[in-house]
Image (cartoon, rainbow, N blue to C red; front, side, top):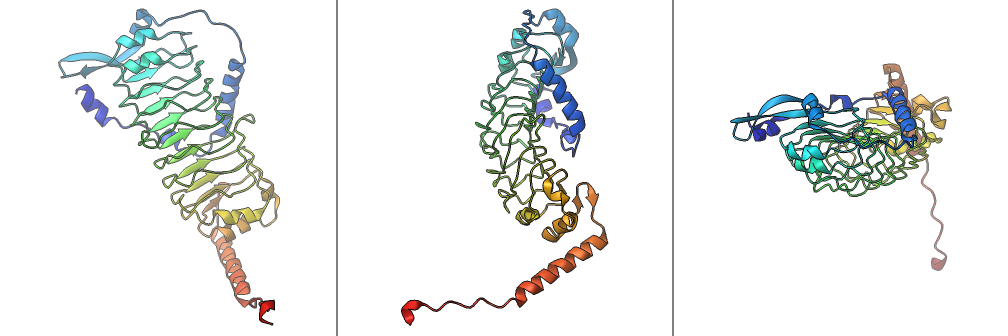
Length: 345
């Protein structure tokens, strides 16, 4: 099989990203990297060598017209690398893992135009900027020192992981270029707004906070995410549920655990989400109300699960009765009398 055929047939395995709650594991991982990042030690220059390449290369495949072969997978993880200049010559690489090194520059990867999969976690990168790579589908830059989302424009990129960085605002993610992106991981950054995530093909969005990192107080600018099915906003500072739109017609799972929603009336703002079936609101002030669980179902008739607990038929029947009673009371209320117009007297 040639390079082009193999690249066309590649299907990324993203099942692991469509998870519900592995927050405890993520928190431990984030704390480990956070402590490492506080270490100001200066690392000795350690360039990638031919010997390291020989040890790390695998997966021999046909290339070009099928008459030649080359290794297409490289793993040089945790080798104290500060320089990967040598990769410029290995243009047939498709899978590259350079995680847990001390890299500050990934520009040699610009020459790997057949690259499908990149893992560069746990380095010292300040940017994820690369030239447009036509076949790149999975890219992970977790636990670096990245401060922005500029320079990411790979047309087949399906999954982008930027968790555990220092990003304050999302900018530069062009929906006209990122036409395949459906999973975006931004947990554990320093986000203070959800603006800039205007990616209509997006299905999974993770904005969970760790160690008081993300500082989101409201949801805004997500109105065009008509394909979004999963939204994680755990441990932020959200007080109001304004910002959810009926245009978010595919949203099925919403995690708001550990925020600051105090008023049960805010749940009415989620009525316009026609496919919302699972909602997590644990550790919000509103969950202290005695009728919290029932009120959620009254407000959202199609909700199937709240805080991981499925609704029973009895609860659903009671909520239906409450809605009917409220409707009848509203219909029975007399129309308010109009005040006479003083000018007509």
